[in-house]
Amino acid sequence: MKIQSSLLPEKSRKQKPTDVLKLSFGTVFTDHMFMMDYRNGNWLDPRVVPYGPLSIDPAALVLHYCQGIFEGLKAYRRGDRVLLFRPEKNIERLNKSAARMVMPTLDPGFALDSLLKLVRIERDWVPQVPGSSLYIRPTLIGTEPKLGVKAANEYLYYVILSPVGPYFPTGFGPVKIMVADKHVRAAEGGVGAAKTMGNYAAGLLAGKEAAEAGCTQVLWLDAHERRYLEEVGTMNIAVKFDDEVATPPLSGTILPGITRESVLHILRDWGLRVNEREISIDEVIEGLGTGRVEEILGCGTAAIIAPVGSLYYKGVTYTVGDGNTGPLTQRLYDELIGVQSGEREDKYNWVVEVS
Ligand SMILES: *Cc1c(COP(=O)(O)O)cnc(C)c1O
Image (cartoon, rainbow, N blue to C red; front, side, top):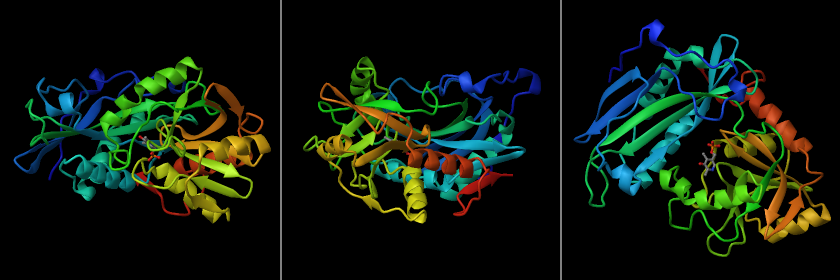
């Protein structure tokens, strides 16, 4: 399929932000977006068009029954080079989410080409300063107008781009996280492993309670026993015990993060003992008391690596280590951001250059 482009004349394009590090995450968008429709069993009319409002029917299925999924990845600039981090993994996961939500999948090669094409057109938007990047948001929604609950037969796939600085307003630094003991995010057999819209709406109330307790994010426990660690808001979680780094297994209730997979790969390569296993909140709280838990970190594309400075659980605050960024967390952050931004050797061939 050929991608048609109708681009804005230079003079109609937006002013780029002067200080991207000060922007609130995901509030500024570039001049163009990619769109493609799905009708009668086929993907049609792939195009790059000026960024702007969508026109969809108020009865579109996504607006009522949340048949919608998305992805998130980043483009980094190193001098004249623009780099993406493992984009094929995002496309693979988009297709898995699509299958779970009974939506059509994309041809992976075409999806990657369309991403590259859009970023190439918008390459001047990829910011330069350390700590910044161009966030890429592929989105797939069911647009068929119908009030009966069913899978749509019409879809829209689109990709928008947003220059961003750090995910948390505090930048890279320890965050305080509330352990949710009332609400749950996903149960076995549900849609926790899909990057689907409803999961985030379901988490908003716990997020509000966390904010009221002075916390930046929610750490979810398992839906069954409220005992085992699952993941944090938009990140996976890992705990550094004295001789082990542990992270919850991909049991179907957590998002299989690409950052998580990359972190595990790097840690194993560094010779650390890494386990994907159940971690109970009791083990963590006890370990914080005895010092066996040395560091806790969140990992995800938006925040990359987020050191957890303290946990708030059942009304008590527990400090992790001395409350500052631990050495392993710092080392991982430096390594990952180094590879993603092209400053460190890309040993595992993770980086794709936008030529
Ligand atoms: C996107 C996301 C992650 C992180 O996945 P990455 O591929 O590392 O960005 C983790 N948990 C949830 C719930 C997410 O939505």
